[in-house]
Image 1 (tube, rainbow, N blue to C red):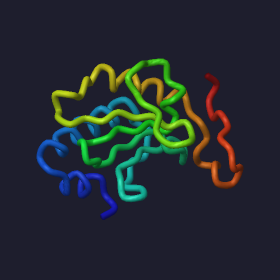
Image 2: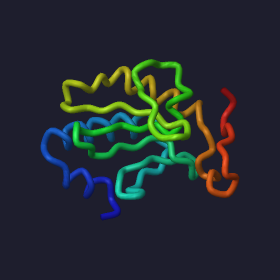
Image 3: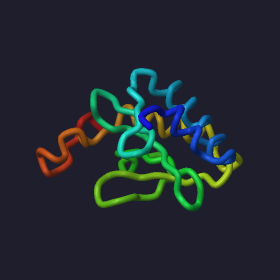
Length: 129
């Protein structure tokens, strides 16, 4: 499986509904981002740097922003040991499109350099924020 549409087809109906809504928002707000299945999940990249993606979790679909801990818009929880943050959606009713769109705007302007993390062994700011 290497295509986002194929990934979405594997999801149950409630999760697929969320995934399709998220995919539409991501494509609208990050039109220059390259989307692909990476490490088994849909991820969108700007100039090779991972920006946003989603994956199936026990509680529903989780939306992850690689630099989300640096966002100003509330509602995301820290994930992992770097700068990622995300939010889970158990149903389409949990998805607030306006809030997701705000995070998308921040995702464009607030980026940590994940593309070079392995080489540098640390995160550097990729954008000025």
